[in-house]
Length: 350
Ligand code: ADP
Ligand code: MG
Image 1 (cartoon, rainbow, N blue to C red):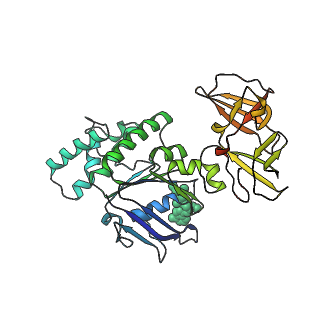
Image 2: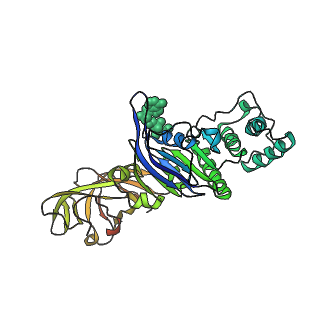
Image 3: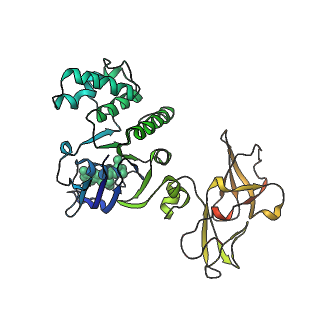
């Protein structure tokens, strides 16, 4: 497997649109890195620069295994690509699609056939080599696209929202298969998505992008539990925010107070925490940090989501596995463990 380095890679298109500010990114050999961010943040542009379909602005460099490939076109970089819309050849069979790159490389027919069988097995499509593309489901098409990308034994596998066009259940199956396959092959892979759960499930590391810049790079756990910015905190999962006034080691608001110190007295601050970290207090009210009225409840099967008005600027969302049903308007007491509190700026959860 090969490492990839982007050094000061920016991209301004001829129409003046600055898709990327100069960015640095280092990907280890065999690593799966996910580029995650909202539509238009520059994920595809970054991927296309790695592929050699787009070239960085002057000064930017792309390196594979330390070798400068900045000026090399896609066919000389040894990359395999998979796209959201499959991009298969509709007038060819599954097998012909998979072997397309091998044929171009003048690999003999017998060798191609053997290779097709291996690849079909790898993507769980045994026996479908003769099928026409229009006889396949979306999930099967994407498996063919993956097999085609892998056929030429690329040094790097690049995937741009490959599961986005599929329905939820299928997405999960393919995601699991892909995860296994990437680990088994040990290939360096870069996976683009706007779906945070996909990013968490697949990435050894996740690169969160915001408007042409890298907002944070980290393991899925890092970006979930230690988001570097407000943007990352909001983009990954659901984040509660409680705004109040700093006073005597606490952040006070009308429904309660949370431990908070270091900020100048009477200053306004915001603490954040995840819905699943909030505990519903049922025994002693002394253990509660805040109280409020239930605004709405959503039974989600494995857990219940509660929306609670604690007299802060916005309601607090709680997710609990407790098998209790709450009434709208019911008073409820909540506790947030100190380790779950996050804060950006002056002062710390104390
Ligand atoms: P993402 O994949 O994250 O949705 P893109 O990398 O496709 O984002 O696009 C980033 C920004 O660059 C967007 O504002 C987009 O409109 C712009 N852009 C992308 N490709 C081109 C192009 N060929 N010409 C001009 N602007 C482009
Ligand atoms: Mg895109």
